[in-house]
Image 1 (cartoon, rainbow, N blue to C red):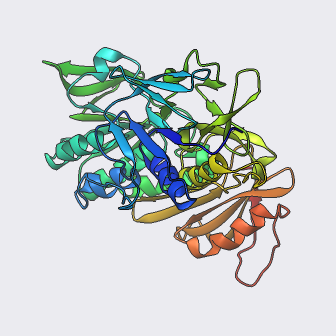
Image 2: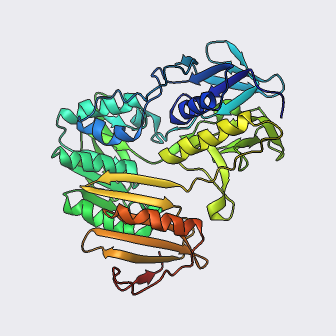
Image 3: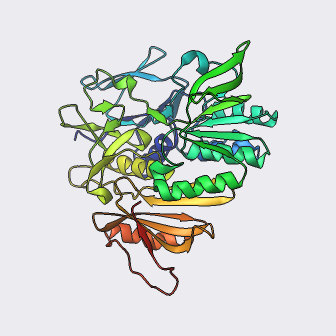
Length: 420
């Protein structure tokens, strides 16, 4: 790595970018620090957008705290559009160019749009990712629509559905494949969340797809399903995943594609040929990195905790001298969601799990802790209104504890060990 940096540029002015900026100053960096963001807003917190902001409990202004001595330049509302590794410059949408000694890529994700542009542009069709999205959708929910249709079976869709029911708005959720939340929680817990949603009045349709959206005068009036049914609705919220913001890196020579920006365990970005770029780092939703808790499998996770932890690791490594050594990013992915009066938390990653056991509580109680196993060891734990147990199981995941876990403990039910 080159000499102590004088100029650091962070592309991405959200949680990861701001966390890195704070960490850089805390680590003693006193040089020029610039944060570039494509949104006009100062860095803000996203989790409340699909929860408290939609319900009107919070203002859309969820700006993150900024240390008064941060001494950073913010270039907001100005996206980066090109990276030149040889010249060590980032070109911006306003025609200016920023030179750097170290660069952090933290450009995150955006909502995946509806596949038909004319339908996506209808008045009444929304996605939910940023502050402006939340502000506009919240206003429409306060106008008491006849019905909201949610497309997608992930956490964002179900949090919006929960908000609709809290506001006594009729809501239909369309899940094309499998069970709700299956990608994160597996089919059994995902199916349980689906049951709970139905109990709260959600019209949940599994295996359902939209054939077309219907409109009058550019305004949504309903959706036609592939099975021929028509659902009248004022609003459709498309919650079908996210796209990583890598387009500006095209032609840079970095290993960047729809899966994210590839980096090593120390947050250093790799070239397409696998070589490390010693002065370029990545953090947050955009980064695809080897997970030490998953046998070094490459992962990219859209979790609040990982964005902060990875940003801090990247900041330390950006400043590490030859004798200091690098810090491995070893955060155990974790996530939480509030919906239908329940708090769901997850530690670890369930992908590839081949075993499932409920170790506390039961589905009937709507309070439980479940473990996920793969190849004979514990890889993830999920709780529904039982989060106090999770720290112990997070430690078990880190220690590569065996699966199935111990059975017949005094505070456990008889273990229900199944395919996940």
